Length: 412
Image 1 (cartoon, rainbow, N blue to C red):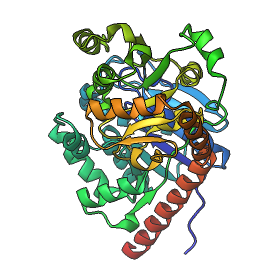
Image 2: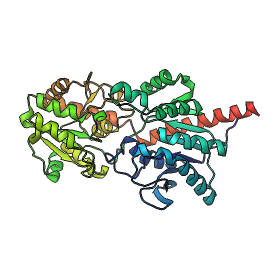
Image 3: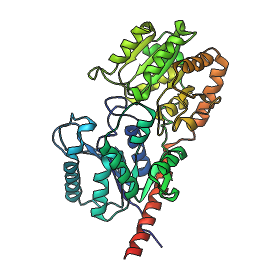
Image 4: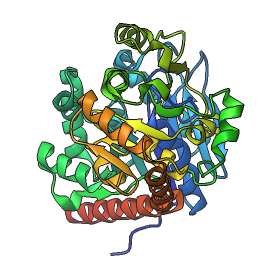
């Protein structure tokens, strides 16, 4: 049967705004994904509106992030609420969204929810409008609990299962994530669509290391290991501080951590660890910076380390590789396929600091190997364009719309 063309979609990301600097508070790869996938989809001919919570009192506010791609801020609770405090305000967010759509006279063809906090809102409005719904989890409670000591709220687990079974199609970033979704929720393969994200190749590309170090005020002769991300246990920055203490070359190695903010006291626990292990003078701390500034940090580094306990997509690894810098990463989630072991970096089987120290020493001690892996990293990263990501997302939207139309015809 012929399915009506998809002309406009609504994305719902209650707590993850594309306009927030990654690495601050709860902002990370999902924020970057939304910021870049929306304009890429719009460039392919489908208009995109991303609905998210407002950062300040009042609203709604509308921001253009590209031709036919917008971010719409809706008021729902105090703007300073952390994501765990947003749940009671979801009904308010839903009402603000419905009011905005009605006031603008908007019509959508599909609703795409991002993260568990958005699930109930997105599925509710999709049902009210009689539209297909697509889900992207980004992270899953069961995976976080399995890979770390963190305990996730029961409400989240229930919501994720409801989202998985209520969606017309579930998006996964990798085949590994599709397998996990299948195992966790018993979803059939034909209801899961693999649609990887991308990396901004116009921004992240090989540039001169010494010039970048001069701009940042870094020592031109030190070995630099870079960490980018939220300084929280699940991302494993403490693994790197402990690894630094075990490195043979630690006397000439500097660990640079970029993420968090002074107001959050994000690094306090890590600073104490660095002092305790006697490597405080070998660690430099930087709060989260916009991606345009992050370019110099990748360029100035010799290698980027990603010791996360799990990554659904692994954007930092891709950004580093696109910048020509090899990656030493945990062999988990998307990292296990994005980082080609021995070609674009090294995969570490466990989160043992000694294993990370060994891999980092091995790379930093062999400039020719480091250079070869950097070249391989660039070639690999260039296959992850946002245009390609948009095409794969649109293929999923068409699948969801087709299935929705076929089920509606059977019911009718």
